Structure formats: structure tokens, C-alpha cells
Length: 169
Image (cartoon, rainbow, N blue to C red; front, side, top):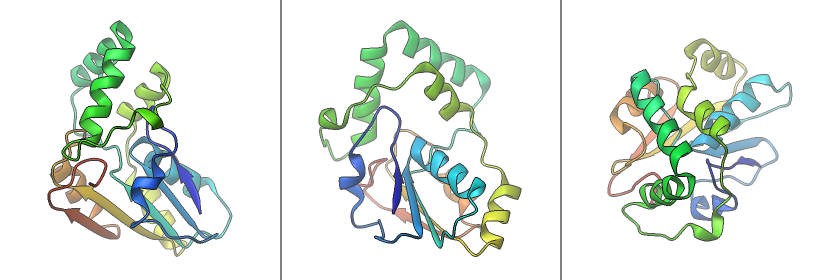
């Protein structure tokens, strides 16, 4: 299985073992990594049977002012921004993600915040026979879970996990 990490993270896939499938024909990604995983599958000519999107970063419902504010906060204090970001990612579990920290760049954050999930591209991936599974935590403090769920539910199996946050714990 090919896995794509979340923003400012590496090695966090250990927290998703119950959702991942060990297969040469599966691709998975967490948050920002879900965006990257989707683009990898979309541009790939390899056989991919399953795409697993773990708390996919979904910000296309946000106003441009939200994105500008996030980028300003990041630029004015990267360490503080990432520290708070990781707390929000692990909420409500309180899992310390410091061992998984790999500070991301402003360019990566901007790509994450401005990414648009394209319905036509998703339909094309589905038409190739790829199954899409989406996992969302009801207590997520990063994305608008209801809006993400409403968007993804028409493209595959979407799981809405009660009492779980962005990290799905």
C-alpha cells in the first residue's frame, strides 16, 4: 500500500492501522495526504483498487479570508501554529504527535487550504473501478465534517465516526 502523510507529519499511519488495507493495489492518505493520495490515483495508470481517504482536508467551503488568516498565522509564528495545529489534529484523544512532527512549509499549507476536490476527477477515478472510502471523525476540529461528509457520501462509502476527531481517535 502507498501512504501519503498529513501536513507537518510523518509516520502517523500507525494511528490508522484499523482503516488501512495491506495491498499493492491500495493507496491511502491522511488529511493533506488524502489530497495527495487522490491526485496520485487520478494521475496514475497503475491498477489501484482502493483509495482510502482518512479525514481528507476539505476547505473548499471556507472564505478566502480564512485561508489568508491561516497563512498569516503560520508565517508570523510557525512553531506556535504547528503546535496548536497538532493539538487540534489529536483532539479529543490527546495523543501526542510530537514524535511524528515534520514541519511543513507555507507552500504546502497553502496547497492544502486552497485544494478543490473536483467532482469530475473523482467520477473518472470511480469509472476506472477504484473504490473510494472516506473516514471522518464527528469531533474533528480541523475541517467542517458535515460539509465534507455531504460532499464525499455520493462518491463511495463514507464513515462518520462518533466521538473521534481528525486523527479518528
